[in-house]
Image 1 (tube, one colour):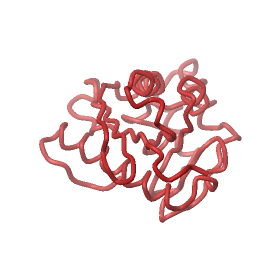
Image 2 (cartoon, rainbow, N blue to C red):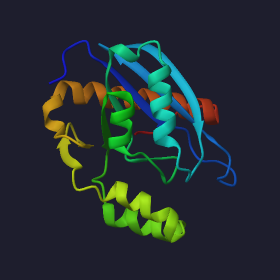
Image 3 (cartoon, one colour):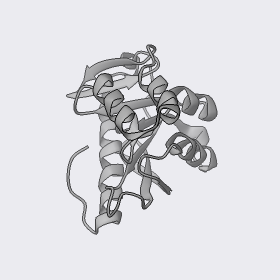
Length: 185
């Protein structure tokens, strides 16, 4: 169970624009007890393979790294099909990673998208990530929460905080990218 006062680092990307080959902003909001304590930013490629590395680098270089207890993303993929390997991120950062979505994750649909977008050699590693049998999904606070360990142990209050922090990251990323924030996570 995460303690009150634990810092949450939430990651969200701005929208994919133009031809889809331009890099997309990746924003991280670090929050504790309803107060934003830090904002980090970097870039990822739509459909690229560097999202996990960029997240780990951003967390590990942050001055708040030691206080971060939880990393949150909006699903297992950022900027289209730029997949996040939860095990790799947790190993490199020493932090727990949860993926939160409004809709129930659909591994079959994601696998079909990967197979149609990538050649077999590129698709193999991406398919391994989404088909990891250790990923546990549960519904909490109207969202689906997914992680390598049972997400139930973080509690409903921390889930609410994680969702709100993720919402802030999404609004900031979209606002920077388009000039005005809107939408839901």
